[in-house]
Length: 79
Image 1 (tube, one colour):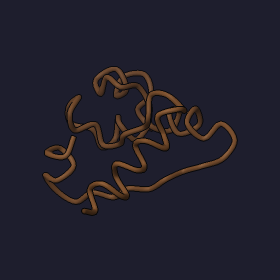
Image 2 (image 1 turned 180 degrees about the horizontal axis):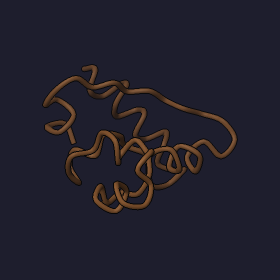
Image 3 (image 1 turned 180 degrees about the vertical axis):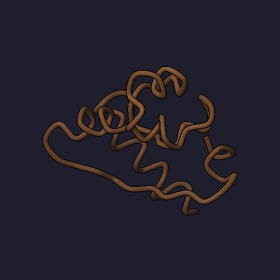
């Protein structure tokens, strides 16, 4: 993940709120970039993704993992 995120410009944001993960996953679109380009071409991954590793956006898989991923991005990588 570190290698992928450090290949170019990177913006990390933490989004919170009721049903935030589900809502962001809708905006992000399908994990498979090619599927997204065919069936949900206005999503972030369809517009900006180039491969599975460079999907244009990352959204946590599980709501419970959100705090851990934020700690990783905002605390551990900062050191």
